[in-house]
Length: 232
Image 1: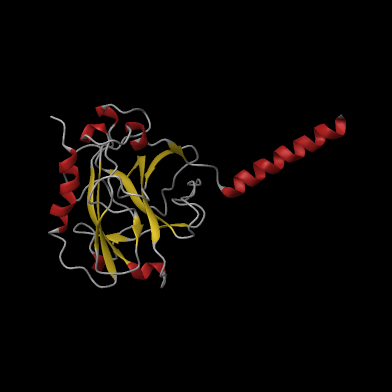
Image 2: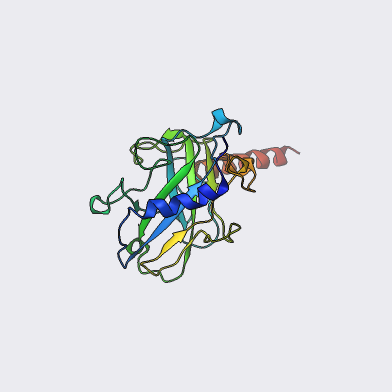
């Protein structure tokens, strides 16, 4: 039986009921998306395991989400957002990484979480900031992210939407006004009766070389070009 899009849109409202009241300096993001896939295809077998590592990324410099370089989880001016929920308590510092759903059970490929975001981490920023969900099919949530980092060529997926397309939902933008709850516009594929293409839910992006490595490679190409030019 195929889940209905209406179910996808209703689930966050059920989740947030157990979160409790929000602090004035934080907001709550209801995020549901399905189905999410790895890089190999869009069959049921390709749906993400529930234990897949996911992060919330903020585009703090406002120039779009930068590619992920090897050895890091974000590139350019992007930052990982610290979040908390019923699984990662704010009193323990929250987390920068999580899997598809709180608890020990879930449905492969179905992301459903209510994430609380403390606004103090943005250092007094007043402008809204765009955020994106990013997933790494080859990495399991719970790893030490200071030790385990993406390798060059590793596949990852990313989703954000600046203008909602499903009724009653919000853009993937965090306002710097605390105490509010937002239902982020879901990535809803045909498996949920949505209009998003299945390919848009795949891990179609790849980790790029480290900036220093890329610069050295470019210098090597330039030196080779100069040597060839002198021989002509």
